[in-house]
Image 1 (cartoon, rainbow, N blue to C red):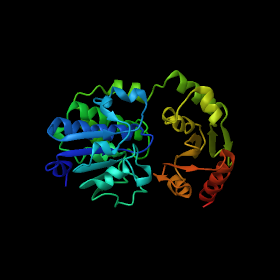
Image 2: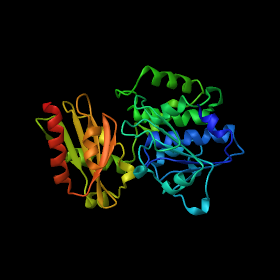
Image 3: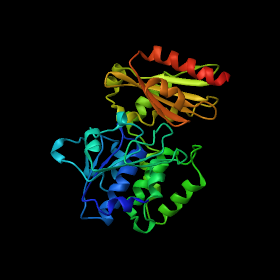
Length: 318
């Protein structure tokens, strides 16, 4: 089954991603939105995404996203849930819409996905990104330049610009085909992955300056408090790439970054070669991938980090 098989009898479509959408979430949801608009213009299509980084708005139709679903939109023939492994992670108040839709489809690549969230589930934990999963579900002849730009951005971000272990031959096959659509790949990668705002630069510098090493230098960790967030006038949306900067500290196996979100602390985890951070995140109501995962904690950063270090140490010893 392909995406076209689901769309052929749909008159209305809703598209949702996860809370605090990252590059892969934005790229995959907008990629599908553009694909439908290009090839099925008669379908009433709405995309619901919470606020995302301003530099992602270079993507086609990024201005047509809605930050919150309400009953005013009504019900849909088909609802897509993309790059999201659980109902708890659905963004833009999307759960009631998805539960009410006549048909639903989950497109994802998280190893923590239960594979049964929707009536149709396309989940491949070996894929680099939701964008990669989506690419191989689309008709390549129907993929426009607009769609290709979105999918390219998502793959770039979830592969760390092709340096993460999730990058495969299949990933590069998709990338090669997307480049043939004539996309401005240099602009996309430079303006959304390698650059940050001045505020982001300042707060990233502070995070690095206050970071600490633990477990004989195998772990680097840092966190922000609500007071830090106020001092830099920074929002959670602007912190998505900080963990990847922490991950660059040489000699470390695991990077930990905590920051406040809605009264709790969001936990971001990254590992390089040994530690399965998905297992660790499951202890904090989260999950994700073997080398990249997240969760949340109601405890202080110090208490949370202490527990994280114990779990990491157990894996390193084994």
